[in-house]
Length: 273
Length: 310
Image 1 (cartoon, chains in turn red, yellow):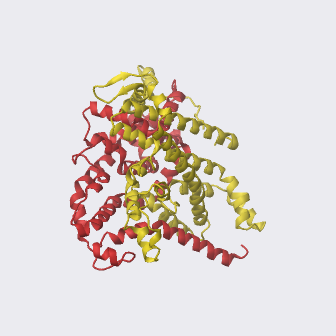
Image 2 (image 1 turned 60 degrees about the horizontal axis):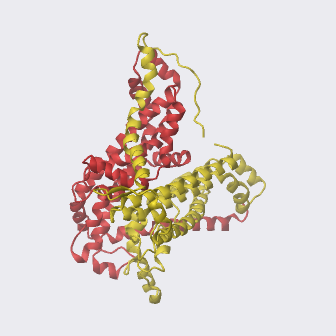
Image 3 (image 1 turned 90 degrees about the horizontal axis):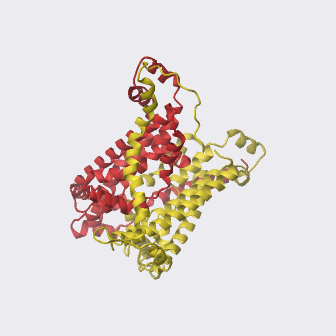
């Protein structure tokens, strides 16, 4: 590189600036979550002591049932999508059968149906099933739509597994279901992780659908619970911010522990869709 | 994108007898879960959505065939026109932003020296992506609030005349909605560009270096041409996202002030769940869906023609 010293300076400077701007709102969120009204007015830009940890206690006390709802919804969504994806992925990867291409195209074409189009009929469907205000409605609704991508990723992965492994098991007389669960599944942890992380994001962040199918507190996810946070006037903003942090922490931890799976899922999903 | 089919016929090692038939039916058995769930939660609602756009329907006692009435009404519905215009502005600007900023971020991160530093920066840029989008919008609502971040900043600089109720004034509301997420680096687009850059063979970089190509020439003659696929994909995803999602306007402004930030998808939501006008809402959905579908298919065809399929 010619002129590389100045060039590198600019390069690192730009990177640092973009990073700072990207993270700045979240810095403000964190420091404001511990401030009362007075502290917020006097020291807007900087952290200040005392940090009101009790805001987190107050927020958690109101949010924890909703946090549990969200955990349950998210886990069930992941489970449903994995069941759909593993079985269908296995069928498409391992067998030759009549209509294979067409059926696969049908599964994939569902990616093209936008959420807003199904919002109303899905709401009506769940109403007639008597599932409004339930946790089930919140993962059954998005589950089918989320499965297309899972089928694609899992099928691709399964096709990369040497056939000799499965054939050997078949010769031994293992049933197909056993081959799937005991041979294929243990080998496909990377793809299972990617699908799980993608759907964790989907289940945890879903906003419009729960807004439509829940009312009241009985099955509210944490994302909706945030809007009803209350507290004393001079610390309400801090309490709300603390709530935002609490609702973000689970996904953040998941992401930090599985960055690779996350990146893989996000990119391969988008590339192939 | 044709799925490759391994053309080997399998020697099945199962016992003779009924095995033949059950082997034939086996794959269909494995497809039951996905087709059952898709049938109930996707196809059936899709059929209802298409059908009900021809009905006067309030979800309860009123359910009457009206033919093309909704579609005719839509064509002359001033709110729908405003919503379409807002959508065009938001989508165009957002697509442009997504083609530039995440690419800049990806280039900066990709050319950093040292794997550790690269990984760290990549993770840092991705953090906002993991924060639930609604929380990001709530955060920005506070950034825009009358005593929020922007106005506090302006006040401390002594520029009180520049303070605005950013989301509450029709002159600033739409731009404010668009500005959310500044500097727009993280996210899926950033990841796609990074993946695209990573896929460029190192020999090509080596050749560029030997030719003494500077950063600019390397970008225009090597990276951009090879990132064509990523650019097309980011454009497509940006448009789809902006047309489909109305979380941002729902949380930030609820379409207001007036109809300044109304978008078609939000209009559908409000017509349905605030006015119980489910037939009309379905018609909005069908029109929007048709437009989106045409755009998607055209883009994909165009990408395939320029690329040769992946």
